[in-house]
Each structure stands twice: as structure tokens, then as C-alpha cells.
Length: 81
Image 1 (cartoon, rainbow, N blue to C red):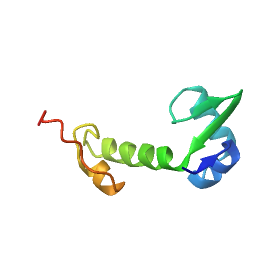
Image 2: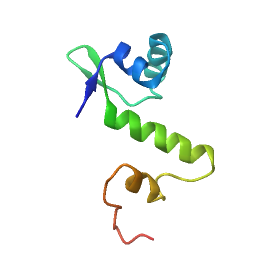
Image 3: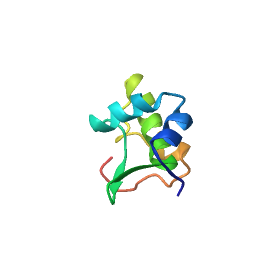
Image 4: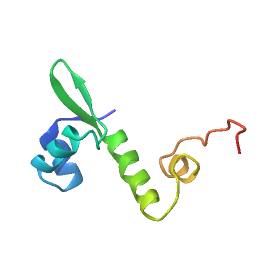
């Protein structure tokens, strides 16, 4: 896993650190608090971007196998389909 601080996450996302801070405060971006520090992972940010993109075109990422396929994970086989 690739860990990033707020400044690195902002650079990765091509946005300002204050925008990342606002998203974090509003709990709109995936992050973890460890020892009083906020960290972000590249993998969770990539998934967040993909799922947001799917939602923007009307696809429910929880029901879509596309997000798993694009991220190189095996689609879930829960038998709920």
C-alpha cells in the first residue's frame, strides 16, 4: 500500500491541500487517523475516484463488477445477483 499525507494526496489528486482538508473534515474522502495524523492510501483514493465516476453516470458501484475489474480485483461472487 502507498501511504500519503494531506499534501501528497492533494498533489496526487491535482487539487489543493485545503480542498483535501475540507473533504476529510466532511468525511467525503477515504482516510484514516493514526496517532493523531491523517493518512490516505493511493489504493483507496483510486477506488474512491472510480466509484464517484460510476455514480456520476448512473451506475451503482456496489452492484457493478466494473470497479473490481478495473482495479484488478476479482469480482465478488456472493450469489446475490
